[in-house]
Amino acid sequence: MVRLVTHNLLACHAKDCNTNNFPLVFQNVQLEIREAEFNPGFIQSFLPKIEWNALVKTAQELGDTSLPIDQPEMIDDELLKNLHHVLFEIHIVEGAMICPNCKHNYPISDGIPNMLLAEHEIA
Amino acid sequence: MRTRYLVAFAQSHSDFRLPELQSISELHDFHIHLPDEPDTSRPFMVVELEDEKHAVILAKRCILIKSIYEFYAQGETYDEVHKMNRSNRHLWEKYIPNTSFKFNVTGFNHTIPQRRQRDVIENFAYMDFRGKIDMKNPEITMACFEEYECRQAPANGLPRKRCEDDGSFKEIFFGRLIVEGTARQLVGVFDVKKRAYFGNTSMEAEISLLMANQTLASPGKLIYDPFMGTGSMAYPIAYFGALVFGSDIDGRQMRGKGKPPGVIRAATQYGVASKIIDLCTFDVTHNPWRCGELFDAIITDPPYGVRAGAKRLGRKKELSEEKKALYFQHSQSPRPDDQPYIPPTKPYELSNLATDLVLLARYLLKPGGRLVFFLPTVTDEYQEVDIHTMMCEGMEVIANSLQDFGSWGRRLITIRKTSNNKYLPPAYRPVAGEAENAHVPAHRDFREKYFQGFNKDGDSLAA
Image (cartoon, rainbow over all chains, first blue to last red; front, top):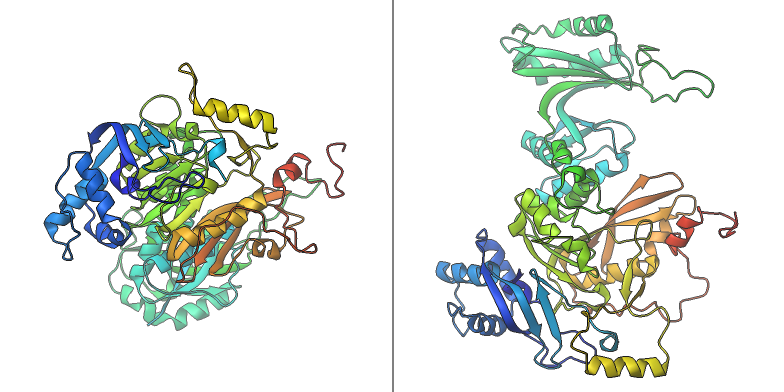
């Protein structure tokens, strides 16, 4: 169930992988759409933490083009609804996340990503 | 205007009573005025609130509140009680003409014989309530409590009977029932035995609810458990409306057998599955969080070694150069029939873990956010200063409640991030060049101490 809100907060953390390590790229994914409770207040307060470009790019890769490429300054109801759907309702159940820099493969199974590092990847 | 209320506490976890009251009043943004020297070991406490609604809020959310009364009188003798009650006539005279009522007389640590209960009630006759007595659905319920000392059975005798020494009470409290506590029933709702998924380290329901209250969990908040395990604390937090992230170095704890993962199954049972934002497998000392200041609270019960010890990535003993080369060669060209790679782990000593956890919380919490976690301590060795060994600038301890198991206990520590500064993530290394005479906290090497039976003279297992 990796949701895009989670995906947007995770970067590759392997040793010496410090640039171009975000966003991780989804691979061979199996998606599920699950309805979630709409909480506009939370989205608004959390938005400053979200990397907009990464979110839009990832959503597009998964086939959702409801978000504008440039982050709008005004947030209207429609945008909030779209954000809600993208951030909370798209679940990645199976697949992997690949680091664009070091190509580390973080596998996802049953919706739980394995972000453990191998012995040579820890400092 | 402030009114006095009598709070009757449930008879458990007395050290947790005040922190809970304070947390829930902070969560709902009202003041609770406590007595100057509150004695939390006693089951009754007179507090002041600005509004009766606040009493209702407390009773709805505080796990340790049994009921709350409008306070009329207290005293060591009935003469004192009646005198005070008469002087507070303005509080109850509106009930005189036509309000149905009932009268309860209850002993704490004691059973008052029925006959004397009747006498007590009749001695309040001067209040002159004209309304009818209604034992089933009264408009108001008056309550009179006699608090008795908890007396231990003498070493060579039978325990005291519940009705012995009638009348030798310590203090009397009298008031009108405002609200019965409704949060206590959650202890049954979250009973671990009835949960769809749990493990041998699952936290009992009552304590995890108390922890949840310390985090100020409420809708719109995001709370993180970095040692998620079987998710015991996630369910009450989600029930109170917060969104939850969980991570654990061992994914099997969160998954269990079968599908969907165990934590999700249990969350579904409580109707809060959609509040579990995500679960991730990673070592919190090598974590993938992209930035800090994400969470409103961090809640966790770090594994401290009685059932399971904490682990982090790495090896107890470094590999030889030769083996390292072999490992590296293999990791570059895995064979097709390889089992999934499981990295090696090493023990994570408790006092280092605690220090790191506070630093991590300072990085990951929003300003004003809270870190709530359990720290096991050795009862004979614990000193206040132990807690300070793990503190850092920008973080402040706001509550420290002991759950006593005899020779050891665990302390529920609540820490607030008081600073608005941005901080770096911790380095997860024991502080280099630690001063030689630095204080060694009693929870250092807790696991070893536990299995040596807390030997004071340091004899190891020989004893």
